[in-house]
Length: 273
Ligand code: SF4
Ligand code: SF4
Ligand code: SF4
Image 1 (cartoon, rainbow, N blue to C red):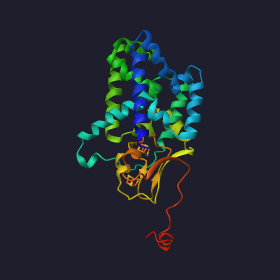
Image 2: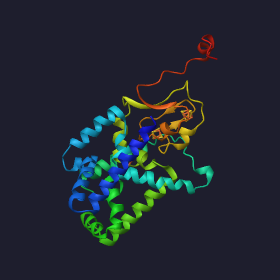
Image 3: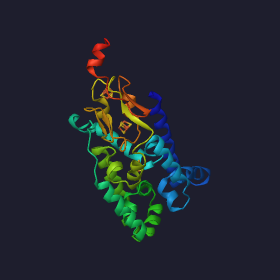
């Protein structure tokens, strides 16, 4: 189980490097970077090459939001930015369980309407690959000018939009971890619906859990509630932090749900208490 987080981090780093190569490099490195671009859900939908979209939907139905843990460069940038939380006051460094926000469905609806109506500004600001490209464009003004022209705005406005994306993303990540992923991102909302009954889920074993709260403290999605031994699997982005940090191996990525804790009286009768 400990290797899951390492594997996930290696894959996320690899896809981030490939995405950067796609945007910045020419030649063989740029061509290699195409692998990452073609693995992204929205670009694959827009180019009507639906293979990647269908692949990720099936993977999500079985394993949950692996895509958000590995392939999405915006998600990896969010994880990197959220490391700045260590500079917050000690009382604010820990994550806490946050309830689901219904606003994500409204945002998804607005996003879909904009796509159908050909309004590009909203997708440019909230679609994950566009966010990554906007941020990258700050470091590459010629790409920014191109993107800005596509949106019908001036190059300076395009660079300003990229810088604003970068600052907004960093601020939101520091304050709420994967809050963007679970409230704003339209891809995240679709994947959370697809993975709402994933065959492999993050589950707490109530017989092993000591209630130390570490998993809740480290969950950037704010989807672990130790009281009640509850994980909101829809919002879990499969970062594997909780699995890695639990001192008792009580929270696991497994197939199926755990049964309820062995009742106290039953354990007492069998001599377990
Ligand atoms: S929710 Fe969106 S931004 Fe977050 S990792 Fe998933 S696809 Fe990327
Ligand atoms: S880290 Fe492990 S033992 Fe601690 S509360 Fe979470 S599941 Fe329970
Ligand atoms: S429940 Fe665990 S794997 Fe899921 S997002 Fe939270 S810390 Fe990551």
